[in-house]
Picture (cartoon, rainbow, N blue to C red):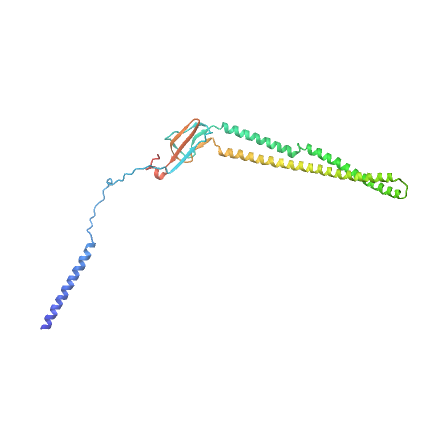
Length: 272
C-alpha cells in the first residue's frame, strides 16, 4: 500500500514537471509568429520626397573655340537651339587661308622648277668649261711627257758623244738642263691637272648638295601645305546632338558651347 502511494506521488511530480516544461517551450515559440493582415493596394501619391540643391552637369559636351585669326562669315544657330550631329553651326571666312595656300603653292612650284633645271643640266656651264680645260691640260701634259722622253734620249746620246769627244761640254750640259727643266715642268703640270680635277669634283659635290637641299625644301613645303589644309575647315559642325547653351560669337569671331544629355536622362534632366 505504501509503495502504491509512493508511485502515485512520483508520477504526479513527473507529470507536473512535464507540463511546466511544455508550457515554457510554447512560451518561447509563440513570439516568433505575427498576425498577418491582407488588404488591397491603393494607387496614391507618395508622401515622402527628397529636396536637393546643386548643378546639373551635361552628359556630353562640345566646346568650339575659334582662333583669333579666323573670321566668322556666317552663324547658323542661336542659344537655345537644338542641333543634330553634323549640323552646320558656323562658317569661317577662308579668304586669308586660300591666299596663304596660293602663296605656299607658288613657292613650291618655283622650288620644283629650280630642281628640274639643276637636274637637266641648265646650270652645267661651269662644269662644261672645266671639262674642256681639263681635256686641254691633259693633252698638254701628254705632249710634255713625250717631249721629256725625247729629251732624255737625246741627253743619253749626247753623253756618249761627249765621252767620245764628238761634242763640247757646253752642248752636253745644255741637253742635261733641258731634261731637268722638262721634268720640273711635268711636276708643275701634274699639280695643275690635279687641282682642275678637284675643282670639277667639288663642283659636282656642290651640285649634289644643292639638289639635296632643294628636295628637302620641296618635301617641307608639301608637308606645310598638307598640315594647313588639315587644320583649317571653314565649315564648323556639331560633333554631338544637343542644345546650344552658349553662343558668344559675332560676325568676326569667337566661342560656341553645345551640350547634350543622353537619351536615358533627357526625359528627366534638362541641360543647363
